[in-house]
Image (cartoon, rainbow, N blue to C red; front, side, top):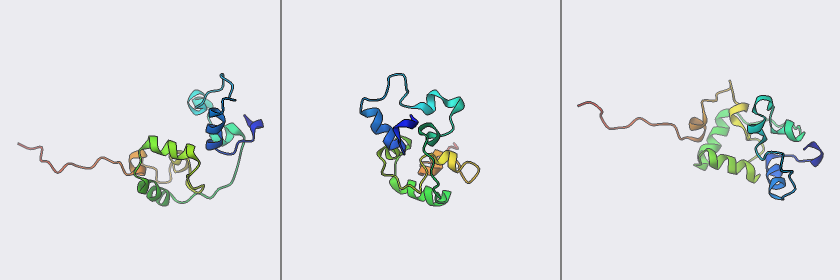
Length: 118
């Protein structure tokens, strides 16, 4: 994969859709190689130094989109996500404010106003 000179997941997705990807290389290598997975940049061999925004700023960005996790994956694959927002916020912000996808995307369960008492 490293010889392909890919620089992002969006590049990877385009490569996969081009029909050039060998059949024995999975489209979702992070699932297949979960035990040894070190990140997509490691897989494609592209390292870059980006100063990601804080968790709070990234969360505000994500919540404004009003999308679910599928929408988030589609955004990442499209290449339209700002580079200062991490593709994998669950890993980037682990131990730095991460509370789960529901919190990040603004889909947390809200208490019902209905009374459950009889």
